Image (cartoon, rainbow, N blue to C red):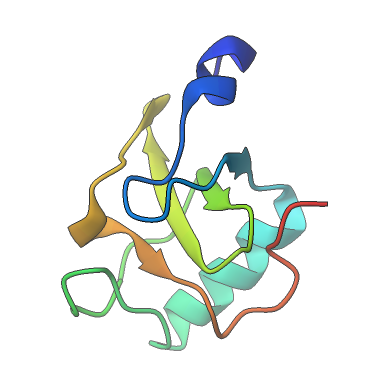
Length: 89
């Protein structure tokens, strides 16, 4: 993803800046998905593993990146408050 685009993107709900997840963060999220612990903004359990994503500065919300395109839809955002270590460094 282009760095200029990433610098412009913010969470549509909180307006916090977004940062790209690293490999360890994706692994923790995918483990939580596999265990059925993550829900989306629409209240449904997330079942698809995450290949790439953007997290809010506080790490409480993650948005998917599908085929290089950020999916900044509130209903599809992942509630990641239960996962430590996702906040921006």
